[in-house]
Length: 116
Image (cartoon, rainbow, N blue to C red; front, side, top):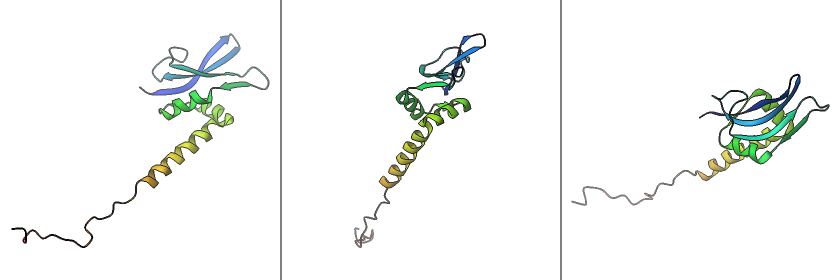
């Protein structure tokens, strides 16, 4: 199941209001969704955006992909930068944990011929 973080349109005619939701990519735009992450109101000046950072980070860590519009909105909130920072720090820590194995044969070699 491919999960996307995208906008779900709500509101009345010519008065759009959006919810940021995590949804299966196969579902309709305004159809079923897994969880609501926040909302976006472009009609207010300046626009109003509220995002639950913990939920957004949780879905991104699970592998959810963002649409372009959501990515630009989350970038303005600093969530994309925070996710990328955590991702790169996690990758660098796993690389430092993997040390090359030392060879255990430090001078003592047993020949098979002498064992017979």
